[in-house]
Image 1 (cartoon, helix red, strand yellow):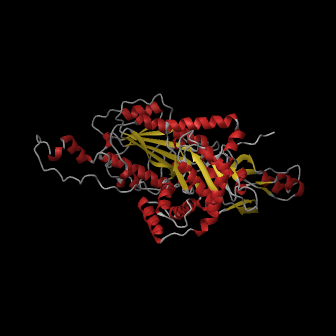
Image 2 (cartoon, rainbow, N blue to C red; image 1 turned 45 degrees about the horizontal axis):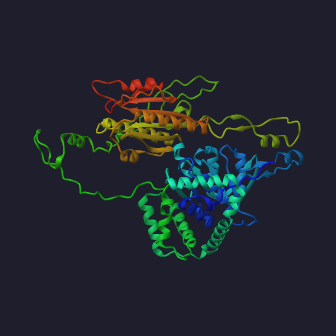
Image 3 (cartoon, rainbow, N blue to C red; image 1 turned 30 degrees about the horizontal axis):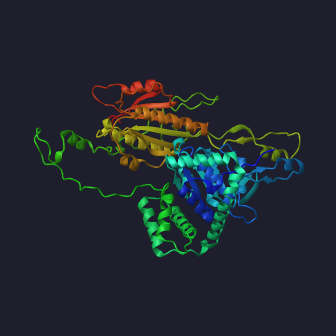
Length: 577
């Protein structure tokens, strides 16, 4: 016998005022679109999300609105719905069992560790979230049903990023703090201990608070339609979204809906400045593409007057500072040299993709020319083929319910092997001011452009200033990275070992999620470091691209390639390109 799961009461959770309010606003107005909760392990993300189930209102069909959990390892059929095989065998009729999407209609679909969700399930979620309808079509038989729900997800950002397309589908996003006060830690442990000792008594102690909260939610839901918005609200939201560089209008609409819900939550009938300001960070946290421009604390100084070699420039600027100015400001990389490789194929060794048994391995160099035929860009995605998994639906339809079966049908592969290009770009102080770094950036931008045409994925990490900074989180390759690369900060030390370790963690995480994913890593560096990476896990299919072009070469990039078991390649200069 399966014992029912007893959830921790929502009102008993210590602290987390902002997250509680964001979740409650989505119960008041489900059209906000859900909440993404990002934070470290053990920060009550899942506890609060699951506790929300007890506060959901009555559904149109009677009873509580559904709260459905989507497991990470769920199959596509479990999510979208599946064929009732027994009916086909016994009655020769095709009927469907409801999937999780149908069960979540009118309620909440919850995904723990949503950033680890398989891409196939993410694709299905995106399709349904856009239309509100789930359509299942198999061998001429079609079934559709309404599927509108609030999407609540939790994730640990240290375990990987969320795909941008799904990220934007969450109405609000809250980032949980990594630390808390001693008093809060003590109170949390005491609450948890009391719950574990006697769950029933603990829940009874908070029953009155839970009832009062449900009643307040119900009053707010009924009053939502009466909330009005002054004209300044629309202008303010539009201006702030424009200043934040958000794409599309989903942020504007969501912001307005969230402000309405906050207004009725506090008992108002008109949206106020408080309502607008409270929900702003939750709406923009995952959509902002640029920070607000802040005026400099001091006006820029005029260029120093000319001086003799022995004079110190006016304003206290040293000769070393002057050299830095001549090379480019510290903290700003040289502009991208796009003309270096425009239209040129990138001749690199072929991707080490598994070779089909019916044809020899490709030995031609990698050529990113925008085609997806064999031998180019790692053969792009392999041609569609049959998998080893039987397709029971197609088999039953083909045999018309007869037994024994005369033929067995197999599933078709959804797509061939996807390819992800992971770039580690050295932006440390030793590379600043050199035209070659601009050429390296031009190479990365050209790789991005051609991967975009080939429908490949990209991720770029910059390492400099003693830190590793994501310049492009994993996503479908954009048309260009020129603006992103030119605005990236540079300088400082070369944390190459840290970059390689982080890349290794990302690669292992991505391949656990998608066993068929092929990742090629490009480590682009001048090798100005004494760090060893021989004890770090290898990066698989990796190319070390040496940007050092001095008269006397140190050969450190070649050493790094040997330690990583990687291919070694010298970035061509503009003159040799």
